[in-house]
Amino acid sequence: MRINRRALHGVLQTLSRVADPRSTLAAYQHVHLVAADGKLVLTATDGDRTLTADLPCDGDLPETCLPVKPLTTLSKPESKGSDGYVVIDVDDQVATIIVDGVTSKLATFPVEDFPAGNEDDFSLVAFWPAAPLAESLAFCLPTVCTDVTRPHIASLCLHEVMASTDGHRLHICPLPTQLQDELLVPLQSAQVLQRILKGASGNIIIARSEDRVKMRVGIFTLESKVTDATFPPIDQVIPKGHETRIVVDAAGFSKALKKVGSLSSDRLKGVRMTINGVIELSSSEEDCESKVMVTPLENNHDAETPDIVLGVNMAYMVDALARDKGQVTMEFGKPLDPILVRHEDDRLSVVMPMRV
Image 1 (cartoon, rainbow, N blue to C red):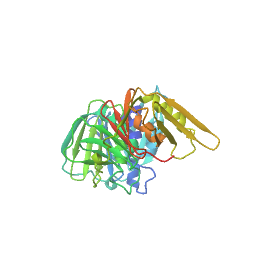
Image 2 (cartoon, rainbow, N blue to C red):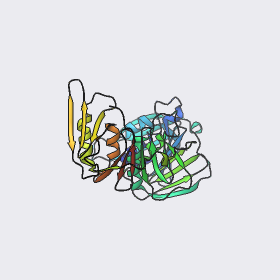
Image 3 (cartoon, rainbow, N blue to C red):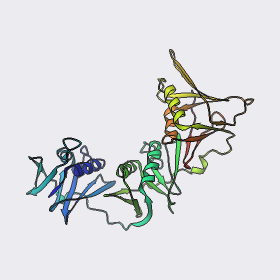
Image 4 (cartoon, one colour):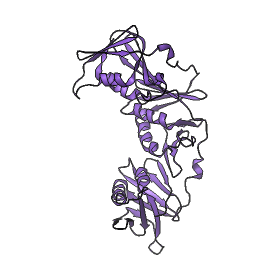
């Protein structure tokens, strides 16, 4: 079997997000390959998720399992401009890999020990354009909780909107169409989904069984367990009735936050925000004090009203402003009330303040 070297290497890099060379189970360190009728199908799994890709090829290859790490290394192109081909042949539990005139041997893993595919009955639940979904994922993934002991928020929520939270902030994006039932995709699976959506055109097809979800985009199909939990009620988290409304240039405000917050030695990069006619951002240490003034584009804060003084986590606020090239509207209540950030494309961010 012969296949384009660059294409194979790119797919193996993505499959390596699922197949783990450090896994204690040998099957999860390998990728399953089979080629017939001009198509090579590669599959990797870690038990919770399975990623499959198909590529055009010349010739056939019987079912075989090869270690993902050395196969990825062997197929790596020598330079950005080089392509070439990889030739793979299997005989008596040994695979011969020929790349650029160099012949290598890899021991195969027993095909019968590689986890069999899932036979669940899947039903179509969504058919969405891939590009805007990738944009929404890039916005929401940074706020998914990384604590696996809290599975209800260590997952990306797809329902009436896309939502994510780590308990300190909440990001919300509209979806092309709403899902009838809540779908919680575990963080690791959502990260793999982001990878296969990168640069993808066309549509993504999402199907679901009782406890698994299958997502097809381009040459990739990702199958994952779904989280058996309930996402926190979003409406109860979004603040209502905030009286102070300020419009800023997202990029400029983010830049100012980074300048001030980067000087803070605090692990949370705390920044003091004082709101009156302008927004004053400041941070202070024993031997260093930093301050910058930001002039809002719009500000309904009455000069006779006492200043609003609160602390914010610099990284959280920067994430809330990320992927914006235009204006955002920030709404404030009392100093310990959550901050609401409204984006021009109907995205929402909620950030809890902190003491500084």
